Length: 111
Image (cartoon, rainbow, N blue to C red; front, side):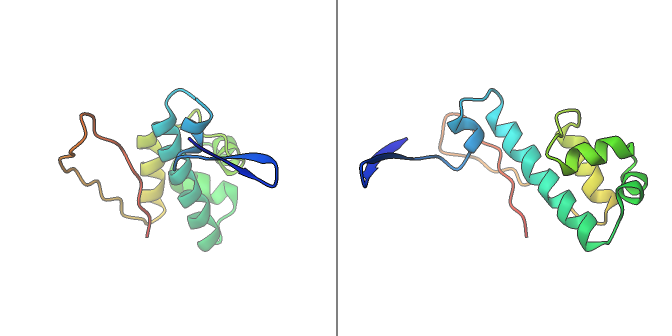
């Protein structure tokens, strides 16, 4: 992280992943899951669905929808979150390509 002093205050420029900046394990997966959960929240609002209706359409219990809307998606896998988006009428495209880095990375791009 890059450090600067602004008006006597230390300011650090973070990466594009707040979870990594906080030193959390599995930061890459957390970022992907967060992005998917945000898209699910947007989709349910755009469709005007109640949590109960969203739960039925996504095939998960309403308490899991409630938790997801509050940012708790720890009990849902990335695959299940993608399935939820599909059931809400969204396509998901996975793109695989070589990288110049020794280890590849996982990113989420939204329209």
